[in-house]
Length: 279
Image 1: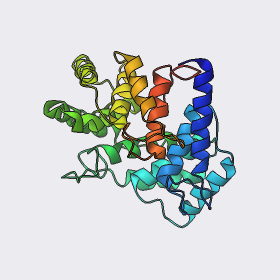
Image 2: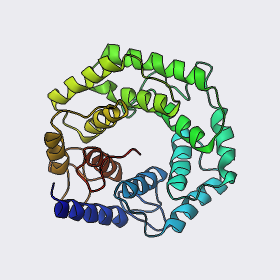
Image 3: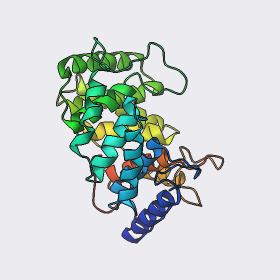
Image 4: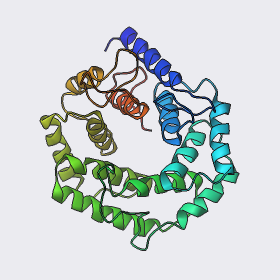
C-alpha cells in the first residue's frame, strides 16, 4: 500500500470512529446513546493503532468514571475496557485499584476467571474472561494467583489444539496473550506456529479469524505467509461509508470492533505508516 493511500485510509478510519461518538462521551457502532464500554475501548484502541487519539479524551474518561461511580463496571470485560482505555489515554489513577481487588475475588480455584462450563453460541473462547481479568490485573499491578492461572491456561491451550478447527482460534489467541502477559513460555510453540501457518493456507473468510492468526503469530515471533493476500482481504472488508465489516460481503455492516481488527492486522503487516506494533 502506497504511503498516500495508507494515510488516506488512516484518515477515513479515524473519521468513521469519531462518527460513532454518541451523547454522553462514549462510542457505539449503531450511533444510538448510550455509549458502550466495549465499543468505547475498541474506538480508543483503534485510534491508538492509527497514531491518533479521541477528539475529547477528557470526555471518554468522564464516561468511564460515571460507570465506575455507580458500580456499573462489574464483569471482567467491562473492568478491562475501562482500565485499559484510561491507561491508553494516560488517565488511569490509583482510585481504580478497587476494581483490581474485585477482579482478584473472581479467580476460580483452577486458576481461571469466570470460566463457562459450556460455551454459548455468542461466546468465542473459554478464556475470554480470563484474558480480560489478567489484562486489567496486570495493568493495575494487583497481585493474584498467577502460577495457577498460567497452568490453567496451558491446559486450555493444549485442549484447543487437540480439537483443532477455526472455532478454537479465539481460545488459542487468548491463551497466547495471557501467557505473554504472565511472562510465561508458550508450550509447543513450534507446533502451534505450524498449525497457524497451515490455517493461513485455508484462507479464513472472516476478519476476526485473520486477527487471531496474525496477532498470535506476532506474539510467537513469526509473520504469516502471503501478507499481501491478507491485506487485500482486509481492504475488501472496508465499507464505502467508513469502517470495516467482518467479511467482504456487501451485506456485512461495519462495527468498531471489526475496524479495530482491521487496523491491528494492517499495522502488524506493516501496511500502515510506522511499522508493526503490539496493542
